[in-house]
Image 1 (cartoon, rainbow, N blue to C red):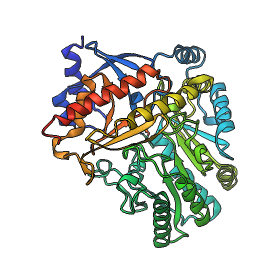
Image 2 (cartoon, helix red, strand yellow):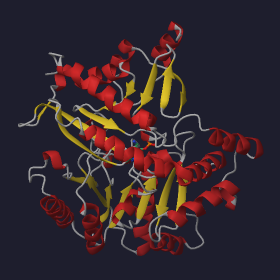
Image 3 (cartoon, rainbow, N blue to C red):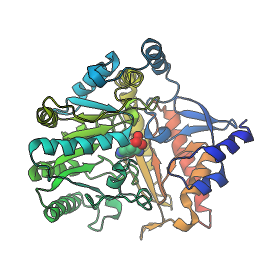
Image 4 (cartoon, rainbow, N blue to C red):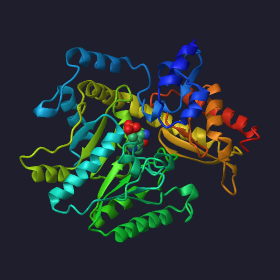
Length: 453
Ligand code: PMP
């Protein structure tokens, strides 16, 4: 049993990410105790299926002994090695090399971070440095998408386009700009893929014209927008945006913090459309959440321009924990598991999940089911014809999250009434069936809730 003192200690001392602090103090913490495969259990003994893999990160599932072994062995042998002073560790070098072998195109250079936010921060610093090295330092304006999420650092929160990350924080900076998302369910041009692609390319072109082509540094995009509500662009959209960035001479950054490492099927979602970006950012599935780590993938062109521009001078960017050997050892083992069957299982489970969720389309609350692989969402509405969102005042996400929890399901309930799914790739058929059944049960109960309708 969870002792009351743990709840009190949490209330008094632990600040939780992206929460109403007062709301959380009132509700009290829920503490998870252990996990195995796709299942977790809390301190009251309540068993749940984790339909969100922690925070879209425990791709390998819980309790993978070989990952624990890899971390323990590395901790015993060499728990830390800096990359400063030209030093290094074997797992970091091997992981960089293995990943570069598998990354699209000429993304042959890997810079390890602690997570996704500092991976994004690193790209902004590298990009500024790149243009200085090229002799075009005026290219210092950055563009991203509405509903985009690119982390919570001072710089990344400005590329992020979610209101809670801006209000009161002085974000975004005046060099950070947005264009509308593809968001096909609610796009004013309608759902036609070609119309959406034409709209997005025209919007990027117009923004670059407005800012000046000689001023724009880079365009940031997630292959599937995650925290904005799992928004999937139409087929061909990423390729069209990538080609346009090449034409306009701006760098293309694919933020794959969620989508990489099997979430949509392959190791990199960019491979789904044969895209080669100038940078890819990753984290989460890189170590399956067992220990923190992120990675920036950089093209030959960018790397060589930076290296030549710096010459004998140090490129002044680095963290104490860059390329941490324990995280790298975990990354190597996780990669082995992905290729040893997890990606394959994830592809099968993803097809099952998508079919099951699509089977809920005729539920009165379901406006749209969307996703790819093991990344999916249901957008809930009170009126399907008008696509009326659930009434925000009733805090539907909190109610749905709580109901799903009681039904034994962890699901992400976004503030706008979107349910997000990103289960571990190790899910069995029973796990997927449980996710679908418990979702149906939760939707039926929500339908009966007069405050939400
Ligand atoms: N980019 C994307 C696309 C993300 O989804 C996230 C985290 N959800 C981040 C960046 C930031 O990663 P982190 O939380 O590890 O800093």
